[in-house]
Length: 315
Image (cartoon, rainbow, N blue to C red):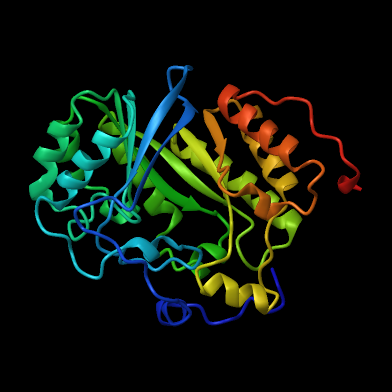
């Protein structure tokens, strides 16, 4: 832990560091894309992602920048189905769909329960539907939505880290027991789950960041998670920029992401993915950057380690 790890971090401090939100339309998602992923069947398939526009998450996590594309008030009934309809007319046909809403799908102030039935009816052609949720929202609402679906439901949960001090500093407002109990609840009701794992949150050295990411992967799979996604921590949300300036945070190295990804794969407990968005941010070497991106992408898709990239920057 950094010598300044006693810094006061709470919702008030985090929000005070923010800039302005982006302008969004409650009748349209703020983004959509299609990416390839190795599915639970073992096949590499296209997965659509719709980034839904809705009310800001009530949990103001230290590292989160998703608030930038949210509304201050709940969206009206019918808005979320309209967003999904709009996106489905734009994207190609896929078998699997992620509905990510910058918070918790089962937060009633974000996704109205009155919309569940229409949302489910729009998803009849899909094999898998993946949503995200904070453990505190995983309850009977989750089961109600699942009962309406023809598709297999999967819930992504932010474990972030099992570091006993950092999990509190992240302002996540959850415990490891909350996480474990939520995974158990989903599993008992035949609902799959995946975990988001942070690589190198604030106040950790590079080696500590790697070590605690590995420990977090181990805990996630022991809890019953089906897959893990490792996310290298970034700046850009205000709070993280402040910690960066004060020396309490530094970006993880792309080599560390490779190491944690390979570690997770070798445990052979389930699929492990590395987030590949803007990976150039984590590299100081243009010579090997593309090779490393290609390697990480290859490992993500094939779930097998391949020969490491050799470069003078490793020295």
